[in-house]
Image (cartoon, rainbow over all chains, first blue to last red; front, side, top):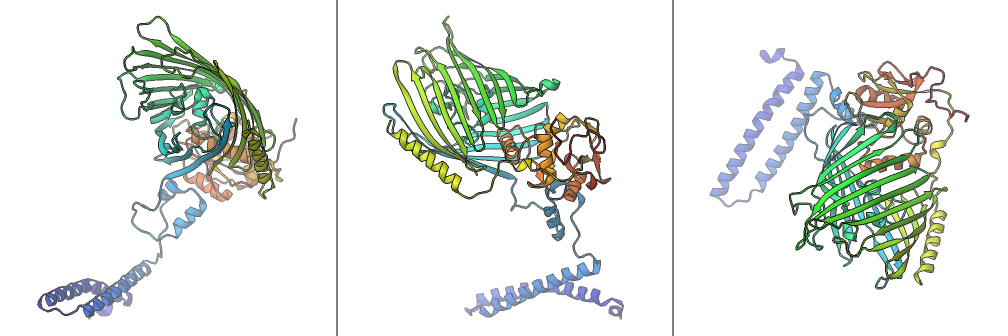
Length: 435
Length: 176
């Protein structure tokens, strides 16, 4: 008899395989019989349901048994993952070990995993000043969710999603940065999306995190557009950056092309996220050096050019020249930036120039970092784009206390002189944190 | 300015409260003295064409300021977890930072977009070696006693770990 020469295990396997084939047919017959009976009579189907349940359980048991027998016949309990998969995903020895313990299954997308990494920043401030109309208030700062994702070896995604309360106390959401970065080498990196314009140093060093900043806030030169800042801090377009082969000088470049700032109406959203109000694009070109000989030193300049088109007035050429020299070390910081914003209405011989600068000095003593900043900005009253800024200058002094690696408490006093107005004394207590 | 004294008092109270709260020190962990007199070998994948790095280039790589090898392959930095003597030595000798500053540096670099990828952390020298063996763009460090033929040891400023004046030492060099 043929079955006599078949090894017992194999015989069992054949029987179970046969059962596996037959059982679905039986199930089908049972189901069709049930349907037929249901059509003919109104009997409850409880008995059939119970039978089906029992049969399904039996099928599952047999499937498990078949898998077990197949593995036993091959003599390999669970093949280890391939070398390739280890190469691609081995971030830690523990994970490699975990992979080795997993049974061999066809490769498929694991939807339970995500490529996203998230970091958060936030701050809460108590502040007050003697400016008419201002009140002493607790203020929620920007709640910043910083998300990155390694899309592939050369592509990376980065975004800053900020939740922020406005002057009406309503909380809104802004995508402050959203960039897809392509990085084939150190000399050429390309990013598309919404970025912080590389004007000067501060704007691209601290973005929307007060925790990274020594002080409670940005210099007013670099205030965000929706806070009345004079610079096109954000832009939507393309940015290229990288190293310039320069040996120990450490030269870098940044070249940007974007929509620029909206200017048709003061009520417009300043960042042109979706539609540019004209065909002209804003250009920015920056160079800076990080020489090897002085650790932490960065010095550079940038040129920004755009054409603004306010409603009911001639177009205005906008040129922003900026220069900076900063020395940033873990225990010491000295930031110096100066810039000129030049607005030249077409058809007029006169141009309006707004100079501004700030210097900021701080030194760390243990967990304490006292700091000083002096800032200055002088905009003409006849300035066609920002008539309300005027002259602002004065010192700020403060103390930052790092309560832990992730929490900083800052106390800052600001004295700001204005043109033809009473000087403003302000005091702020802020807790900034990362999470 | 009636708000002034109140804000000042709240700041002082907050600082005192936070100082009084129990917590671990985070200031100087990176400067802990190591006990071994061994050198640290800088290891890369055998397929990596690079044979030698200047000390400045090594520092830039370990600070995430270089993200690609000359052949275009992305650099994957492998480090050991905080508290390991090898990591302390690298932070002290190469990065010249303590643990807190190093973490802040990488967090800030990722935030600005200048650092393309954060380092991988592996807990044992064997793990570091295996990772470097498997990942063509990887660079890591192990004690010379933990080196085997599966990885390539880089020269730093033309010197191997066995050479005199090799700079990446486990033990802090005496100040000159």
